[in-house]
Image 1 (cartoon, rainbow, N blue to C red):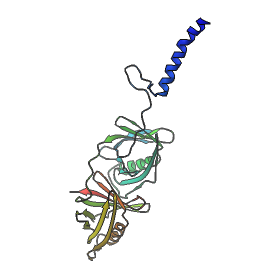
Image 2: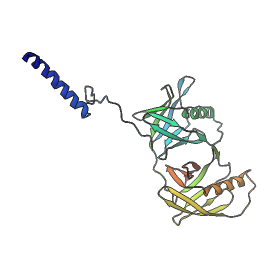
Image 3: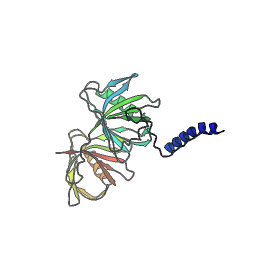
Image 4: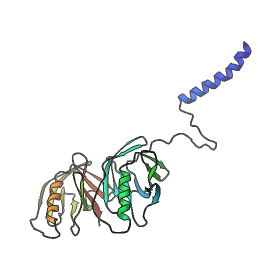
Length: 279
C-alpha cells in the first residue's frame, strides 16, 4: 500500500502543477529558444494603411502593375477607402476576430488609358468586395476568400499625419449620392477652406460660395450657404454639379480626415463629399 502511494504522489504533484499552470494561463507553449507558439492576439485594422503587392488572377497571384498605386486605408469610423489605381473607392467594413466583411464598394468613374490599369482595378475591387477573412504577418496583410485562399496581399504603409480641418485648402474629388460616386467634372475645380472665424469659403466650380460652420469633436454642420450668381456654360454640366455640391453641404453632419483626405459624412455616417488637401 505504501509503495502504491509513493508511486501515485509524483503523478498527483504533476497534475497539480499542470492544473495551476492552466488556471493561471501561464503555459505559453514556448518552443526552445523562448519563442511563443500561442495564437497571435487579434489585430485591429482600424487606422492602418496598406499598399497592394499582388492579387489573384486566373487562379494564381499576379504582382500589382509597376507604376500604379493601389491603396487600402481602414478608417476609424468603420469605413475603408483608397485608390484602386485609377479611381478612388470606399466601403464599410466590420471585423469579428479574423473574419472581415466588406460592404458595397463604390468608386469614382474616371477612365485611365494606361495599359492594364482598368483591368487591374476591376479585378481588385471585385476581390475586395468578396473577402471573408484576413491575416497579418509582420508588415504584410493578406485578405482571403471564403475558402481561406489569399486573394489580395498588401504591405504596410506609413500613414501621413492628418491635415487640420481648419486652414487647409481642400479640393473636391468626389460626390456621393446614394450608391453612385461621381468624379468632379474635368476642367472644374471645387474647393473648401474652413476658417478660424467659423466661415467656410471656396469655389463651387463657377461661383464663389460662403457659409457658416460649427464643429464639435468630429461633428460638423454647415448652414447659411450663399454664393455669387454667375452662370457658366462650359464645361457641360458645371452648373448642375455646383447646385448638387451646395445642396449636399447642408447635409453634412460629421467629418473624418485620413492623411491628406477629408471625408464629409451625412447623419448616417456615410461619406457624401470627398476632398484632398492641396498646396
